[in-house]
Image (tube, rainbow, N blue to C red; front, side, top):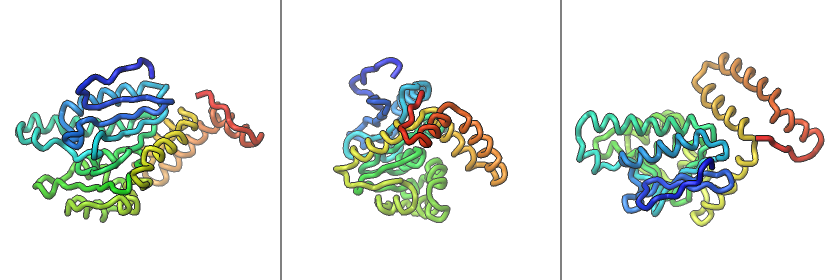
Length: 265
């Protein structure tokens, strides 16, 4: 990374970079990594830094201890029951989710234990997700009189409409195989293999040209919001620019010559 940084004692979000893979770890294990305002501040700062770090090719988001994330710290919300505090907290949480979307790097959620409410939102906001087979997911706010409106935004863009509605309205847990079948995660592996699976997937992405991954991620999400005809127009322009880029010229030449490509980026 541009400047090595030490994780300070008591830091709520840890950052480690190895071989172009930045691992961002939520670090409130005693609270199962419940999200509070201070954690959001640290997480936003790290994401802003990663967005401008060309040495980082892939970002992994994980949770310390026994769980990924149970959502917002409800004790903090109860202690500050005023519109200014609560509104600011949820807006900042939305900003974090949007920052994940806007990062040029692919972002992988590494999920174990529970991922509920804003924790489930975080999984859905990531580009990819790998879960341990004992992971469980829910948008459980409805059980406490709090409809998971903000988690519903990315969840309803990951799973089908009726599946998302069921999750949001019942608050029921789904297990990891169900999350895989519904499209919330990409892969489910035994918990003992979670680290290895994340490392293998991340390395597959590290081996791809950085600029093409970044442009592809931007295009992928942009075209989802467009009408079909406009999406094809956008796709045609995008792939034309891509084909004429140094990366594509090298990649296609390497394929024709039956050799491994030598990426410049």
